[in-house]
Amino acid sequence: MAEIAVDKKPMGTSLCTLRNFSIVAHIDHGKSTLADRILQHTGALTPREMKEQFLDQMDLERERGITIKSQTARLHYEDAQQQRWIFNLIDTPGHVDFGYEVQRCMAACEAALLLVDASQGVQAQTVANTYLALQHDLTIVPVINKIDLPSADPQQVRQQIEEILGIPADDAVLVSGKTGAGVVQLLQTIAQRVPPPQGDSQAPLQALIFDSWFDAYRGVVALVRVMQGCVAAGDTIQLMHGGGSFTVQEIGAFAPKPVVLPQLSAGEVGFVVASIKSVHEAQVGDTITHANRPAVKPLAGFQKAQPMVFSGIFPTEGGDYTLLRDALEKLALNDAALTFEPETSTALGHGFRCGFLGLLHMEVVQERLEREFDLDLLMTAPTVVYRAQLNSGETISVDNPSRLPEAGETTCLQEPFIQANIHTPTEYLGPLIALCQQRRGRQISIDYASRTQATLVYHMPMAEVVFDFFDTLKSMSHGYASLDYEPVGYEVSQLVRIDILLNGDKVDALSLITHRSTAYQRGRALCEKLRSLIPKQQFQIAIQAAIGSKVIARETISALRKDVTAKCYGGDISRKRKLLEKQKKGKKRMRQVGQVSVPQSAFLAILKT
Ligand code: GTP
Image: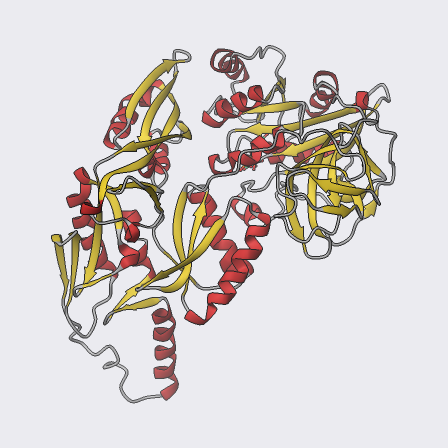
């Protein structure tokens, strides 16, 4: 957001010509592509500025073809009767990890375009997002996308929307984000079916912050939906929860590039810049009001996003610790869901224990740290947060397996459970039920939404779901089953900690917590995996898995007998140097545990067993 234009055709915004809506869908049903077509048809971007999935602006989003951060766009639309409208479109992420982003966007809208892929039909996130939209009292406009595909079956999808979601779909708009077919009709439908926002621009100001981030030039940029009143540059505003007072410097909207506006009134969506130094002072969910004429009470905010998965992040070079801390602080400024606190491991040195929304979020953070901050990192296997009830009656949270108290110190251990909602074609029900049972799932219900579609509801330990469950589910159902989950609390479980010892030294970063019934199997598998990952060294290495003081599995790596440089006799010195250089690079990612060097891949071996 370096340069800001002034909106060239500001209109006296009247509520009756304003439409706020978000686009929600299951992942990959084509939200960002459809948003492109809407941007094009409303003339928001010139053909030269247009690039595919314009609203996915992060490099990582473009490379992976996924939306991570939601984006807003204020668009001018003129219909066939020359009536002019202002549309505020919000493109939301589809992956279950970023569901909290979708919730926040819904608070800023009156309607949701529910996009359903004409060949895939209704999937888990379609259902989850529909419920979310209904909870927010949004008008739902069903849109069937990708009608250009040969496998498209709009009639069947209509039926699914009615049967599974209970939403009338005979007037669902048929579109193709790829070819642009149906987009004009969609814009017309938006104008007609999305209700205008309510609000009184003369009332005391109440503006809900539904996103905020840090901009190096302007400080915090708060994305707001004005519910009541009006805010303009020069106003002194107050944050009703944060408490701070600030002078507004700039008011504007993303169109989709930032434009300055004279003011934002009730019903409008836009940004407020007020030299706020840290996002903690203008947190998402807070209400902005005027300092001299405050609103009586703040708006209902949002629940804080709760990290679900934790992992240790350590720099490969001990000296990079402060760089890593600065990088995490910077990332956390724009990612309210990322949490971190210092952690020390005997094997890996100083680092941070970080909390993520799920595995995709974790991968995104790791990649951003490595790319944007040029850090070399070692990450430990992710874990969920367990609870231990101590003999004293106190209950503690355990987000690091190595900190699980010894068996004698606790009365019981608990693990987090989730409710998994799995939507699948009926032909895959058998294998999927077997999979859920194998993962310690407890069946709650099976609903047949139609002759071909069923919904399985299971309560399952979160540790069994967050890691590879989704991939297994996809491969078992040839990509047709989909999953959505939400936490449902803690349950007492027979848990044990497996420690890994290398030549008798415990490697804290390799400890894991698992269910007693699978402990022996996992211990054995982990030892075997480590044997294949740890390179031979000058001495024999014993790999042991132990529960408490009882060793449950053992593998041995025999000593290295051959001198690796032996074949590099005589000849040019530069050849040897090159070889040594290569070796040095490899060694950088190894950690010395006692005498044994352990490669990064070993720390993630737990995931693969
Ligand atoms: P997330 O933001 O990650 O949830 O994805 P999304 O819903 O924004 O989907 P996206 O727009 O990234 O599209 C997903 C894939 O579907 C891309 O490969 C698109 O090219 C393709 N796609 C989108 N719309 C259409 C369409 O109308 N027809 C066809 N044939 N393909 C489409």
